[in-house]
Length: 129
Image 1 (cartoon, helix red, strand yellow):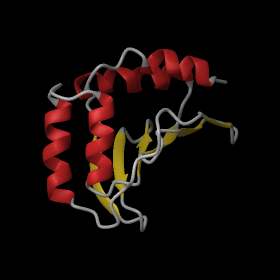
Image 2 (tube, rainbow, N blue to C red):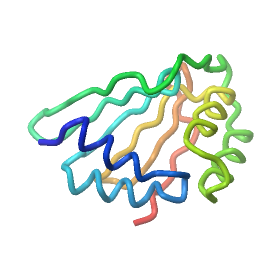
Image 3 (cartoon, rainbow, N blue to C red):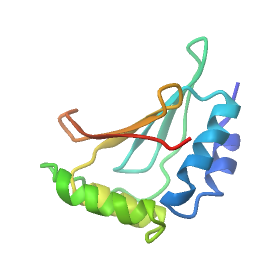
């Protein structure tokens, strides 16, 4: 199965949102089926076959996630991030500002879904292959 070290190595190559599809392809090769990233501290929970799961440590100091989600503003921030105009930490700050609690990536469905604090889906996107 995969390790957090392997995931960190793949993630180290991501400089902006435009690198995200390549990162997902690397995770697929490692055997990651789904993962959740929590905006408040950046830790991830990764899931593979045969109920395999592992969890990373916090990646940064705690962020305050807004209680109320602002999907329209988040879509604007996501768009500029996907165009490579912001780095990962800026995207995380923007996500917290807009009330994104976590995002879930499915490598089998090739989707990334963003959720607010109440667990309500804010946005779901297809990841380019």
